[in-house]
Image (tube, rainbow, N blue to C red; front, top):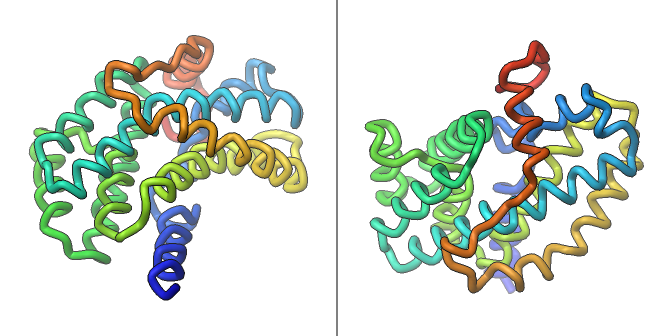
Amino acid sequence: MATDILSLMRLIQFTDSAFPVGTFSFSNGLETAIHEKIVYNAATLEEYAQSISLQAAFSDGIIAIHAYRAALENNYDEIIEADHRLIEFKMNNETRVMQKRMGKKMVEMSIKIFDNPLLKKWLEDINNGTSPGTFPVAQGLIFAIGGMSEKELFCSHQYGVINMILGAAVRTMRVSHYDTQQILFRLSEQTQAYYDDVKDLSYEDMNSFVPQIDIISSLHEKGTMRMFMN
């Protein structure tokens, strides 16, 4: 029971939006989607968040799981492989920048907590350009090192993706906290099904055919909107 409680406390800490990795700085394209009137109310916000979470499950989620298992096996080459696989998979530069900035920050913060040699080695390779340092890989390593389960990792990953969008929505459109919490509650119900779908998939099974979101991200990168980082 004590181990379960500690694991839950770790899960809350590393999933909390207050954990300073910079999630508040990005909107995952939502800022442009609102500007282009693709997202304009609670219903369209929920559709957008669901599309992003589905896309993330079949890409970032698969990578996080592979990194987690590699960390448990102390397979450093596989960790580097997962990191490169994800950065090569991302079509738009804004997403690549987001992944690398958040990933590096999470490792820098976590080293202060765990003082783990695997994390230190990976940070060195991030700094020298050997490894991109993506956020899902960082999550996988930290959850493995912290003694949390693979399912807890996937829950944290999905919660973070959805909550990033909803947090940005409150700051950029007319939507209430009641709306966003209802959306989060409903979208959380799909997490188990997503995990069951992706837990046994390989790198070659990764897919995220949501071209509109990639177009939105490219527009944000070249646009003049600057509430969120690009």
